[in-house]
Length: 483
Ligand SMILES: *[C@@H]1O[C@H](CO)[C@@H](O)[C@H](O)[C@H]1NC(C)=O
Ligand SMILES: *[C@@H]1O[C@H](CO)[C@@H](O)[C@H](O)[C@H]1NC(C)=O
Ligand SMILES: *[C@@H]1O[C@H](CO)[C@@H](O)[C@H](O)[C@H]1NC(C)=O
Ligand SMILES: *[C@@H]1O[C@H](CO)[C@@H](O)[C@H](O)[C@H]1NC(C)=O
Ligand SMILES: *[C@@H]1O[C@H](CO)[C@@H](O)[C@H](O)[C@H]1NC(C)=O
Image (cartoon, rainbow, N blue to C red; front, side, top):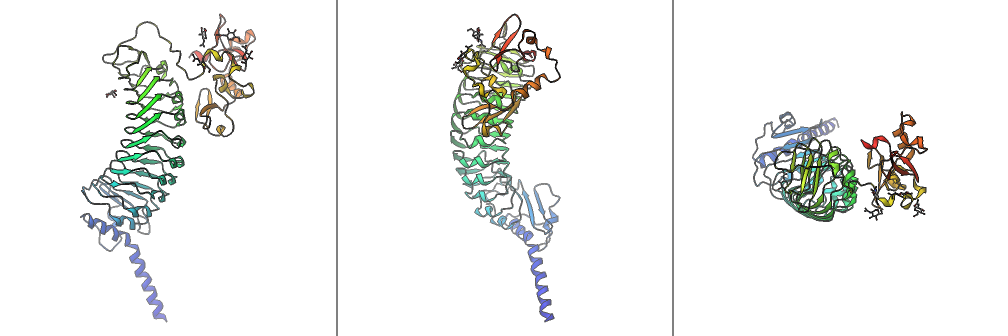
């Protein structure tokens, strides 16, 4: 009796001990496959300590139970070896990085059993075949990086199940097809890089659901069609690269809502027409619209305090001015039909002479004479928001729930169904904001019995001053509009 209990205990200890060193044993087999030396006593858990403080090229971390949670192996020159199936036995892995090791072959199908994975990086190898169609099983994945390989085929729909994904890089592969509809469910995505592949088709509505995006690289593909007004939903975007595609048509005016944009390239497409106002893109540093058919650039460029580099070469019908702020240093242009005003651009550029030519199309807001009569377009029941002043409707229903942009004029929403921008902030809110702490006699028009406008749209100018129309009444344009 006692003896058998003792035996049982002994058994448990042995089995427990074996189980604990299992991950290090698996790692030893992987190392052997790759001809790497093992710097720990085989059969022990010492692999957990041996590579703990290594930074490069190998890092191994374990949890308290000696299970391996992190394997980083980089630059190991394992030319033409496949990714070992044995990695799939390390079933507590949270982070697996196998960058630039010269791996070839396909992605082992068993990798999708590593459901605790949060970080998977296979960048810079020569892995071919398709991305595993059940990759969506890795529901804890936060980063998936498959850049610079030879992956082919299409993006699996199941990617849309990776709801925690913040980073998805599949650039520089041989992928094709369109952006899956399931992408609409990537609620946390911040960086998406599909560049340097053979992707095609229009930009689908699923893409425009990704309002958390900060970096979007779709360059060097075969995307086509026009760029939708929906592009304005990317209010958090800092970098947008659409160059080297087949986009055609006008650049949507809603690009003015990408208020955090620092870097924008639309080069080498078939975009045409007037470049819309981008007065709200206060952080823009780099703008490349070269090799398109843009006819004019907006005068609002001058209002962009950080814009340092602008490339407008190879737009054969481009005329007029580049009206630049002080920061502008690099101005690339190849036609004498365009001149530069302001900036500190070096090189062979033509400086403008004479007075500033105001570009009448240089505003997204409705500033045309048909809205002189504001009741033509605006339902007076609907003037609780400020945006009606600019000819935009007030947000209704669901479109009130999400603020896509905020500027000096208040909060903007976007009505996905109507594909139209709308105002959220109420007229009173904005009025209070503008008049806060100011004496009412700040407004020049009150002495003529008219209140002060909150907007800046000028409908008429008299000897007394500039007049606007708000809520069907004439009002005086306030002095802040001149700044
Ligand atoms: C400007 O655009 C042209 C045409 O796309 C391109 O060849 C050139 O490299 C660009 N210049 C810079 C400095 O980006
Ligand atoms: C003025 O606005 C009306 C209606 O919004 C539009 O149809 C017309 O084309 C605009 N005119 C110009 C010159 O922009
Ligand atoms: C409206 O039209 C008149 C002449 O028809 C023009 O002088 C004025 O500048 C126009 N105003 C706006 C805001 O476009
Ligand atoms: C705008 O409308 C008013 C009448 O509401 C008219 O007196 C004025 O001439 C119009 N302005 C322009 C520029 O058409
Ligand atoms: C403004 O337009 C409305 C509807 O088109 C019309 O009934 C009204 O008389 C117009 N008002 C002015 C001042 O032109």
